[in-house]
Image (cartoon, rainbow, N blue to C red; front, top):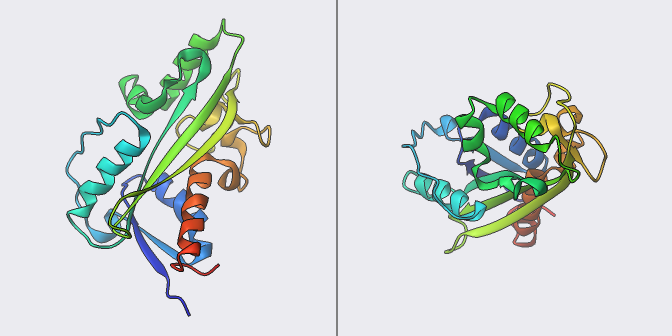
Length: 202
């Protein structure tokens, strides 16, 4: 009888915590946010050159507070016609423009005269405190940028991302987003690892 596997998600983002919980909870994984454990993380300089490096920087900062397994994710939207921008700087790009609404407006403007609207979301999840080295799990969701914003659901760049797999906009997907999103795919790769190694039931 396997006990619940408890992990900490290195985030204060409630949306992200909720999404990760929805995907992992059915598999006997209990996910705590930093707030749940009163971990006050100092500002971390995410200056890695890859998503995995940024995720590791965040996870390592949490490692100072706990020996529990830690997961951290970093993700970005890569738009082909914009040289894969905003990519690694997706969150910073939005912040610099005063939020995702403005960032989306800016992206739509920059794509107006472009034929190619293909894009992809990439998510890397790093797992610490389980093996003696960090483990990385990646998920990629391919799609394209819509002509205009759709729906109020989702968060970040979801309102303009249309999934190739379902033809639906991420912001309009209710449950299916948790099967085709980049984060869902990375988490499913993590789950496969946890199952194979006996941390959670198969």
